[in-house]
Structure formats: structure tokens, C-alpha cells
Length: 387
Image (cartoon, rainbow, N blue to C red; front, side, top):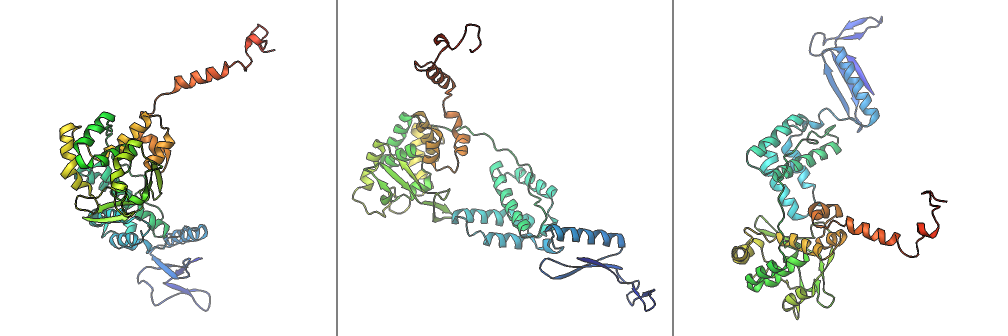
């Protein structure tokens, strides 16, 4: 599987060692082997011990399937990053564009001229630390590091690296931001201040749709009679242009409309074409969140508060109002389109009431029901021990 040749000597006709014409020139020992693809490879060494160690490791790697060609990791970071990015056709266009921005602005400037095999854990850790010192937020650092980790994972799967040097690198902890939740009265006041867009504010506050999902909502996806909304699409602004796609988790879902919300949006739905947007911009087309904030929302917030409220926080409000109305975690998960209930609990678990006392009372009532035998019915002999 891996043979060692002596370049300086060969066996003569009499079996004795004879100098070759390469005697004293270059490295004496060469290891030759064939890789899993059948290609002939070789590597030279000055010392026989080094050649034997290398040959042994090649044989072991070939046997276990962990063989990495010596030149596989020589590809430069820029070439590999672009190849990886071109292969991410499964990503939503908006996600792919954001990832492209990370590659162009952060990964290539630092790792573009570095061979993959030369990327070390220590260098990645230093880079991550430097990103924070240069002003990137902890969340941004995590996203940037995540892109590097993914493209190096791809190199491991492609047989170019034995391990991923970006795995296990400690990342800065993001600060814990307390979510803000509006109550029913605050939602009503904010909606009133938003004028013609009052139905949109109420809709976001009681359905929990993401902005892109609400902006992409078409009349055909709204059933006023059943008070249901089918969330089937999303639209996102990326580098100034609109990108249409599926909802964030790629899963369609159905959301319930409270009766008063259905009534509020009815004028935008009734007698409209099925392809018409429910919440269009003033001059038609998609309502972009920054235009909505600049033209309507921010001024309304400045009048009724809370200070600095973002439209996305109406999604948090929807979760809190649903939980306060008795919705369990699975209902909230389905409403918000979270991939798992764990994600819902991580974000809003503190809003669910502590029901331990209620649970104990229910168990007590069930155990003390008339049809359940009790000690007084003769199940105990008076000594404290069952008969």
C-alpha cells in the first residue's frame, strides 16, 4: 500500500548495494503509494525513520478510510469559499445573498490567500476576537464564524481536511435583550396612530407573522369566513432589491384570525383579485419595512411609545397576547412558524404561567374523587400499613 525506495543505492547483480547515479543528490528516501482514486503519489525524505513513519500513517489512513491527500489542503481560501458558495443552491436567495456578503467582506479578506491546510484553531480564535474588537456585535461575529465553519466542514467532507479547525472556537456571548410586549390597549393606540395602516398593525400584533410574510400575503391566502390565513410566501429586501421565497423555515402554516382582525382587514380582501397584496405600498407593490417605518410607524411610536419600537416587536407582542389568552407552547409554535417547540420555549418560556399549584390541586381533586378508594373505606388497618 505504501513502499519505501532508496534513491542512492540499489541491489547489484551480486546482491550487494550499489550506488546509483543519484547518490548524494537530494533526499535519499521516497515513499510511493496509490490514493483511493488510483493515482500514483510520492513524497521524499532525508531520513529513513521519517519515511517509515510517513508510510505507516499512509497505510493506516488507507485502511481506515481517513486518508487525506497531501496536496488536498493546498487550495486557497478564496477559491474554496467561492466554490462552496456556488454550491449552496439549496439556500433561499435572501440567505444566499447575506452569506455572499459575509464571504466577500470577511472570509476572503482574511483567509483568501491562506491554504485550507494552513488554517489553524488558534488563528481562527484570534480572528474571531479581532472581529469583536473592530466593532462587530456578538451576533454578527457568530454569523461570520458560522460561514467559515460551514465552508471548512465542506472541505472535511470533500476529503481535503482531516478536521475542522473552526469547530469549538469560543464565541462572544450576545447580550440578553429583554423583549418588549404591548398590551391590548397599547396595540389599539399604536394602530390608531398608524392611520390607514391600522389594520396592518393589528394584524401583526395578533397573528405573529414576520414582516416579510405579511408583506408577501396575497388575498387568495386569506379566508375571512373561516378566519384563517395561509402563510405560504415571504419577501425580503436584499441589497436594495426584493427577493421572494418560502417562509423562514420553508414550511407553510395556517394562522387563526381573531374576529376583530378579520373585520379590520376585510376591506383590503373583499372583492379583490386573488393575487393582490393585502398590505401594499401606498403606490402599489410591496410595502418595504424601512419605508413603512420612515413614513408611518416611527412617527406613531414617537407619539404613543414605547421608544424605539420596531415592527418585528409586534411579533413578540402576538406571542405574549396568545400566551396570556391561554395558548399552550405547541399552539404558539405553530402560530409563529418556529421549527421546534424548544425554540418557542427559549424565547417565550418565561411568559407561560407557573402552573405547579394548579397541577397539584388537580391531582388532589382526582385522587380524592368519590369513586377512588380511601383509607376510611377499609384500605388501611389502622397501623399505617396496607392490609
